[in-house]
Every structure is written in C-alpha cells, then in structure tokens.
Length: 158
Image (tube, rainbow, N blue to C red; front, side):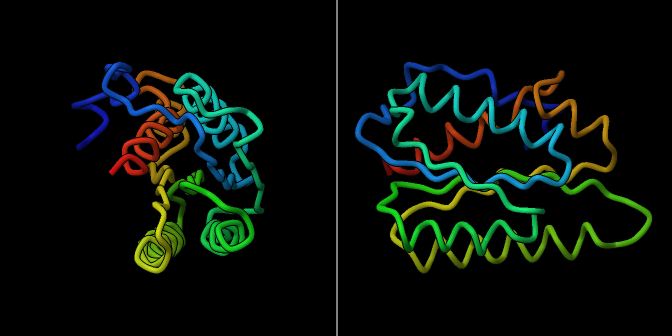
C-alpha cells in the first residue's frame, strides 16, 4: 500500500511478536547513507523495543543496494539467524539504473526467501527523488526501517 495512504511506522506494539531469543541480521547499503543510516536506526530501535538483545543484532555494511543479496546470503550461511533485513535506497535518476537494481535485488531476496528457512526482508526505498526518500526515513511517511523490523518479527513468528 502506498505510504501516502498508510504509515506503517505507526503500529500497535501489543500485536507485534516478541523477538526474545531471536538473532537478526541487518545488511545496510552505504550509498545514500544519510538515508539508509536513518533506516538502520529505526530498525534497531524497533527490534530492541520488541526484546531482541543488542548482541543478537548483526549489522553489516555494503557499498550499495545491489550488494545487499550477496551479503544477506553470506551472513545467513555463517550465522544462526532468525531473519535478515536488507536496507537500501535507490533514487531514480536520469537513467533506468533504478529499475535494474531494484528488480534484481527484489528477485534475489525473493529467491533467498525460498532457498533458506528464514525470512529475508526487502527494506529498500525506491523513491523518485531525495525528498521522497527523506519522507520515508523518519519524515512525514514514517521510517521504513521500523516497518522492516516489524515485518521481520511477524515473519519469524509465522
């Protein structure tokens, strides 16, 4: 659903499963880090709010969004994780690079969801401009990092 219609950062915390005893991987793209690091902040705060211990949150950084699936797979293979959250931001530019990157990452994460026995969460912003990204990284449309954390906790409980 479009962010303009529903801000999922506002949620009933009583309906979110506890993350107690869960281990979560978070992969963060450094490209557009003024945006992705805000997503990371919201994500970590939400996981900790729902009983995931700080020591059980494994954060890795990659150069850009395209590298998220490789790092997610590598982390899942080398750590005993309950879920992997991938955070990135690809802002549309003058070329179609955003379509290729976003489609490739979405497809790769979907494949990882089917290959592994844990959920991989697509926490990638795909805005048309920087303002739309900022609006979704703690701005008027909430913080999609919060939503990615909530999604991970719900999918782990599934």
